[in-house]
Length: 447
Image (cartoon, rainbow, N blue to C red; front, side, top):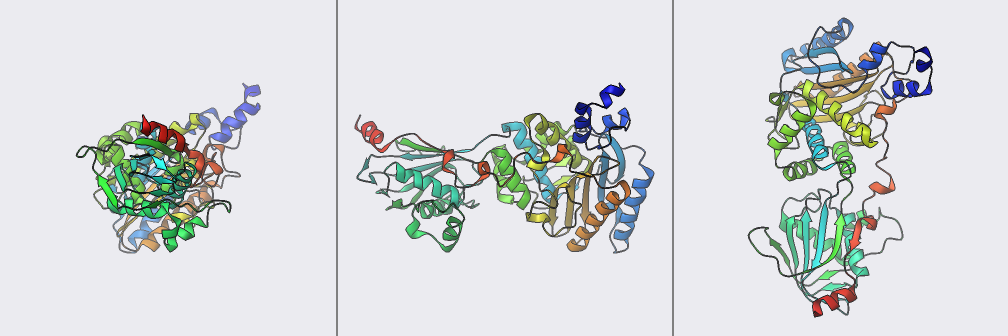
């Protein structure tokens, strides 16, 4: 047994669990395994004292202590709680549920498809018919992605469309929920001669060799609702695949993008389905995850702090055998920008923020020296949002001072696929698949 504990295998195991010292007891190692739902019990006295001091500071500003939800656990060991099993307005912590339900349903590498088709032949660079874009739920069809589609249409010989741009399916462009407006933005993106200043700016972020596309559409934008109107006969030209799901989730969570979250939740069948899937995966009571939408907008979305920790842990369990960690889905303090950029959260923590007019929330995992990975959720009610954020950060700093900071970021919460990697780049034409060449289209239309 002593030989086993001196081996590199167990050292790695302990490091992944967030416990750097290999001479600690077997029971402590077991506690560091990614937990299932934890039941309230006798709190750790020192941790509860630190939490009580935090609550007293909030009470001193006139806030009700019972309205402040907090849950703390180390592995499967309960540490401290305040209204920890009470569903509270969770703001964008809702996106933790949406992330979990999406991964459980589709898997980390799922890509949403957008299909580009033609209703006529291509003759001398002109598509003699309509260009049809059929959306498949891609929540991140933005300028760069549309530029890549346009450049590949140019490669197929399409320079002009004599007919209309027909929009069908679940198509969203630049986070615009109105399909008519989304179609107008897509039409503009296809032709560099019509670009807005915003489009020009985004084009300049692409590699220097990127061509300026030109697909001019003579006609108007026409929206066809699926199930009510029949699409004309068409030939598939291009299949565009979105970024893999885990990259979409990382971007959604870093910037707390509500449109991406709502798009994913709608594709999953709505907020009720998201809540069901998340509660089942996290092994928490269904009444602790009550959702009206997938983004967290509005106080109707209520989640208990314990359920938030349970969902984070469920995400970690899902990701570990797939060579990812929650750091591949959520912001890392000290590394990422977005909603945590100005915060004083202990470095290396993996977190999600949430904000409404009278709600400030923070949840995730805190790496420590003595307690390993500490899972936490804080949901505050109050209107002094900056003050609440400062107090949240101070609570986490106090806990790190109490337990010691982790000497290095545990493997268990290190990102394995950086968000700035080539595979995560917007506008990458490698995610386009050309189905027809210009010659094939002419031959197909002639048969």
